[in-house]
Length: 203
Image (cartoon, rainbow, N blue to C red; front, top):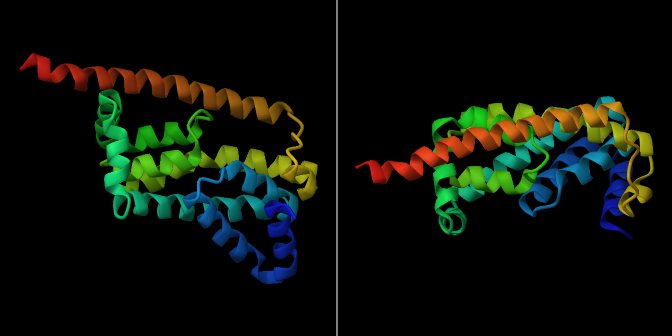
C-alpha cells in the first residue's frame, strides 16, 4: 500500500486520536524532507477544510520548530558547512539575522523555497526563534489552498498517485502572492548580500 494511503487508513481508524496522529506524522515528515504540501492535500481529503487547516498549521509549526532545533543543535555543523560553501549563502545568512521576521515571512509565502529546506537553513542561521515562529504565519495561505484542493479531490488514493487537483481562482491568487514575495525577497536579499560582500573591501 502507498505510504500516504496507509497513513490515511490509520487516521480513519484512529477516531478522536486522528488529529494527534497526523500532527505526529507531519513532524516526522518535516524532519525527513517530505513535502508539506503532500501531507496538507491528504489532510484536506481526510479531515475536510475546516479541520484540516488548524491541524496542518499546528503540524507545520511544530515540524518546522523540530527541524529548526535539530539544525541549531545536533546538525548545526553540517548545515553550516553546506551554507559556507558559497560566500553569497553566508551573506544571506547574515541578512536573515538582521531582518529575520521579514525574511522568514517572505520565505514562507514564496513557492520557490521548499518548506523543509527553509526549516533547516533558518535553524543554522542567527535568526531568533521568536521571529522564526511569528514568520510561520506566511504558511497559512498555502495551507488553506492545499487543504481545500485535498477536500475537492477527496480521494487519498488519487492524491497518492499524483493526480493534480483542479486549479481555480484561489490557486492563482496564492501563486501571485507567492511570486510577488519571491521577487521582493530576491531584491531585498540581493541588496543586503551585496552590502555584506562589499564591506571587507571598504576597510
